[in-house]
Image (cartoon, rainbow, N blue to C red; front, top):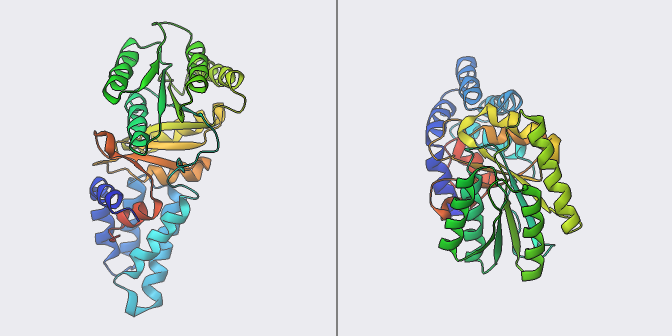
Length: 303
């Protein structure tokens, strides 16, 4: 288990973990169980996972007096870890496609543009080369922001004029990625309002055009969600998944969030794994997801 990730996720989820761990340290009677249930619901873990975690904690308390101190927390952690399915670090060392085309999706404010840059920085440390595609042509500041990041990271970028067809920029980015032999092409899309069907239709067009530029692409469609929004992120994820078929999640702004349980609820709702989480503002604060470290942090256990 990554020590760096564990320390960061533990700090980010400290408010949730403190309340949960205090409850799990008490005798798991009906009153404590109900308080634990309320705390997990408030943290947006979802009703199913909450009930399973509480039941597991109660069973562990009753089963063996010798393990009562850590037993309920360990049991709850196992439930949370299992609820995260096949979430975990995405294997980028030897990707099956070169270039691997990654489409970043999400609403405005979730952190897509910054996340795109952080992915470049993450893979650059591993000696892998990326190309950025500024497909958010509706918001001029988005292209400028991504260009600034590209310059800072010494990374190539494909831009489109303000108001240009996002699908055309996506097409050009994919073709450039193939021609230049990069490892990854990361396409930053406009912040689609998940309640606006015509904007989602435009997003579907981007996906179709990418496939024309490179059959089989985009290879990954990752939704960037704001972890502090809780249950609202679940609604976003469902709509985007229905529209384009997500392959992964990147959850940002978990540092200091009291509602970090939305990660678990989203995975259970749509079956899409978490690949990265954002635990701060610096490029290195985008971390590959470790579900075991996350689960243990939530209940206040050590690595």
